[in-house]
Length: 114
Length: 113
Image (tube, rainbow over all chains, first blue to last red; front, side, top):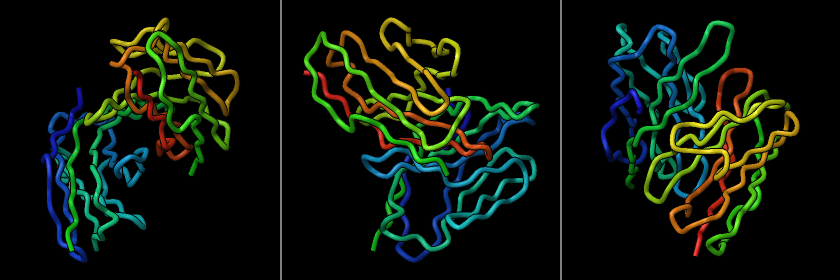
């Protein structure tokens, strides 16, 4: 079972920041937080991942609380093309670099509106 | 990033037949993953394909139904055997790169009639 909880759906106005929350209260010390999105009829797209520090890349920012029990994905200027299902996933990263499996939950359906 | 090509992109098959899906990656990867996404649902991991050894299947999935090949570090196949309408799904191949970023193919949309 997925170890994360996300709202089923959210709306965001075009051009505004989209803030997608995720709860992962049972996260372990060796588990990373990953975010993916799936635009209709396409394969999932990697967005960002982090352990405990905030991360930023060209797509988004990831803010992880100090206790690591929740995180927020921020799309700074949402566009209509950001409409998708967003998945928050915790993934084991073992010593030596091997990774655990990605377990997908139901995700958040983000609708960006004009 | 890794570029993943899946073939076929879609197919309509008769029940009782089998379909083999191919996954080609543009770089060598240690592990490849196969997922299923049933209509309106999230992704479910079927198995992990390791080069040089048998695939590791998740609970609810068996080798007789979903045989997997992994002949080298850039290629894998998933066969959906003795298909029924319940097998109608999108089947996706995935790989990890060196930065532990998993990439997905565009999927194979299978309809069983």
